[in-house]
Image (tube, one colour):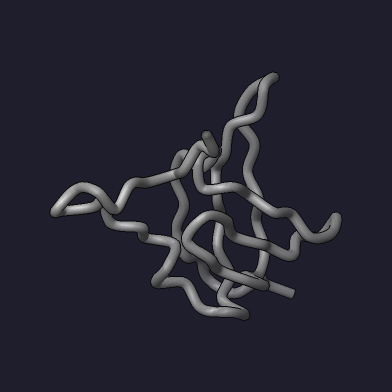
Length: 79
């Protein structure tokens, strides 16, 4: 059986805050990997219920919903 990040079986499913993010907005997203925690800082490329794509300085990062720890919108990059 495929693991889901959330379940719609509950009458009150948890809020998915990343769904409020829009393409082009700058965000920071902390996520888990086997060897620790990582941050993806950059512009939102794509938002879905089960993942977010962020364009960082090193390239595109796809963060699956089940790996997300916390995230928020941040101010535009200073040049």
